[in-house]
Image (tube, rainbow, N blue to C red; front, side):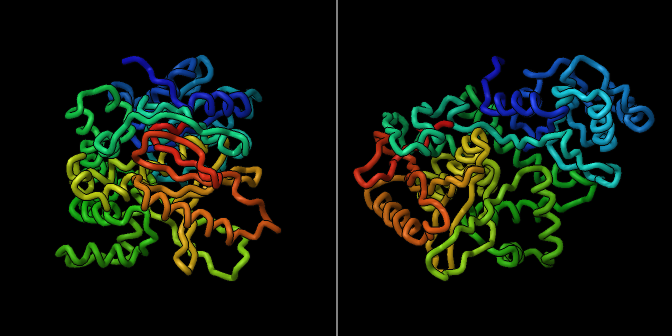
Length: 423
């Protein structure tokens, strides 16, 4: 299968030029190893069945031998032998050179007691997610998120995708193996990923047995509450309401922690700007999966189900947009946050750059009424910002599922179909 370029390629290249090693983390099946192989001079597959036992033994007795090979040397799924971390760090120090190692991992190491050094200054971390619509070829990318930060940028583009196409893209997700397949096969990938998570991966992450039925109930509750700041206690009550005899808050924390360690859940942190008013900011994270297809699989929904339930589709569409915004913002070294205050004024996404510039984003399926609602929210949000202490938003944008065009309104707000957006 031909390799599809990822936005992570350039990020990885730049990181390797500035550090001795780069750790690529992210969900299983998101393409970490495939991308890393494009940049590697040699590869060590730690989980190769024919060599796994030998590799693990060597990692214990003489890890430096595993690090020999043409640079940059890729060590895939390094976390099964945590001692390799310190070995890589030491080897980077000894060689005193950049571009030496790439580590990939689909889980946080189960046992971090064997790691004695943080790797600061030697090992950079890079989070990789499933494909954005631009990377999978489902967005033209004609509207650049980076260029939106320029006041004179004209985000003009034509959109050919309809609501049926968006419903399919939500359920298919950004899994590389799903791209270019028939619809039936493509939709199967997210379901298989979900089944692997609930039946094995959530337990294999740290060797701790967890109940698959409870995991499914948790994933279903999370799916129903995508885009909200629901408290964990409310999720627990939701699970208990489904004929589960007991499920303590500590058990819930344990399950959610495991899902985060395998990069299934990726909540959005709260954005805390300087405000003119004394309105308090809600600090609870906003609930999201790393890919919207996980939520669709958790609910047992396909594209037709979403089209018959536009409220649920709107929530999962928000997750899709947040996924893509995160991927595009990462190219600029930016982060994506969520804003909500005690008066329930809410901004779906805030793209914040390291230089302090930021843009505000509302996410709507489309239609004049919903866009008008988004416009009001964006102006109310901007009005709350204390521009004496921080800049005004560099841009205000409404991301839509449908609409014939991407354009800038007379009031300055950009209206952009998600299938026109790129980095």
